[in-house]
Image 1: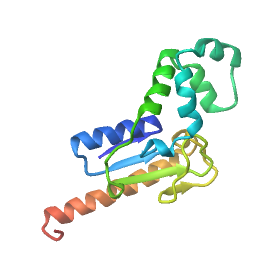
Image 2: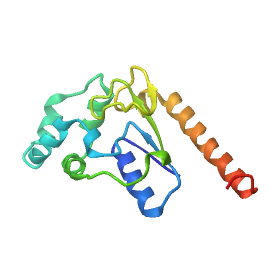
Image 3: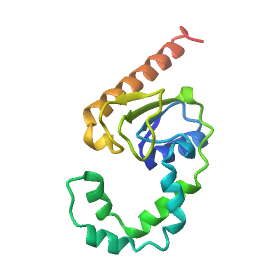
Image 4: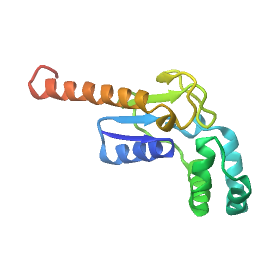
Length: 157
């Protein structure tokens, strides 16, 4: 089982596909590029032209967690992330192998219909709503362990 949040969820899907992992947990993440806010894809070509360090410096501290995190992030990583996300084609991992947890107010990745929804949470719900994320993750792991246990004892085919 692999799990990831935001872009880490996209990486988890890629790992799951290559390792044929039986299950993936996505927290505020996408399964395809179409789920990502189109504005991010449109801005990606500008990533190498954008003075990220300058933008970080003039924006200063903020009450918003994402802004503060972005301020401390290596500008080269920000550029690479923007380009990688816009070029990502998605994955072939089947939806049945994925547990999704998503904030209803996520402006980066639209909240899918078929997921565990956290009312009022935004994109970084792992930071803002950790208890909900842990509960869904534990539940998903326990369900998978139960299935494996039944399979190993011969009760499930």
